[in-house]
Image (tube, rainbow, N blue to C red; front, side, top):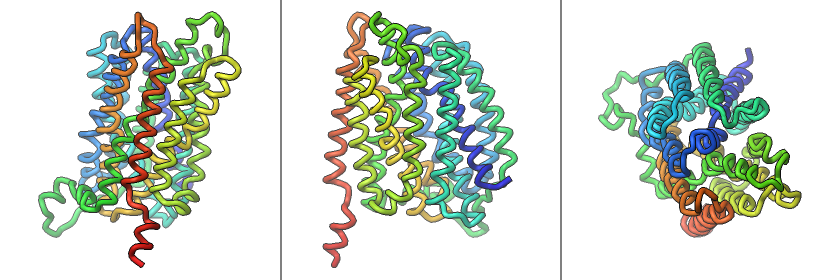
Length: 413
């Protein structure tokens, strides 16, 4: 089988698993299990906790000791088991600890899948800047198909979504073992303690440009999962208004939200052009401004004809907001770091974005949701405006702090 097809299949299954529950689990916990906003934020913060501790050391293991595809398969076996047990969880504590185990295994696979893809592309002498975005786009297709499956089967408020995710994880674990074995970089020469511990990637912080990049990666990472966590509960709340009864937005909210992933698919394909044409500074700035619009349009959107247009625009904006940072950042790091620390650097990026950033973002967002909840009624308008304000402030800071390559070139000349 062509290596591109095989890598696209890997990406498809990886994100199909996530799409089964990431968008809809919040609604299941709030509507079915009666969890509060802070409870949901705490459960989702498990993704951040796992991303702080797991991607870097597992990236080190993949770099030096265990072939990445085999480590990837082992992680997904753990995911399958934990998701199976999560389906029977009914209390906040039980759900948190089970999902934490799942996150500890799943989050490293995001960077490991990138490393596997980059290794295979390099082995077959294919341009990663041109070839990786289409591979990642297949992951988006998998995510979309999973969301549609869960929504059309009316499983958004059911634990069945977790059983489907568990079965998919087991399938991916078996598939990963059929991929080309990723070579490790074992060396017969004496290595320093830093190298043995896989901490080589932290040397990137010696560069002010890279240090600022990772700082804003963490700050922007705080908003990446907010609409994925609370977007579905936000749309489900419109069902309590009889005016919107029977609306497609209310009946199939996950399908509406899947338009975000469709937009993501389209924007992924533009990354090679924009990254080469404008560079990472402009790309990240555009992403932050897009997040501001994403939240702002949510604040004024509803199932009415005009409000629905605003929601649709927000879904379109999402592709730019997410891809122009998350995917471009991964490609940027691939081009900036030497191959011997590829997995470690990708793991560090994942730690900053989906680790520290996601953890604090989930705790903060959960508190914001509860703060604007009075007698069980959530003021979503104010909630989304708070997040929009944060994104705008981040964009302004980034504009003035991150070095402008063009200005530096003029000074040097």
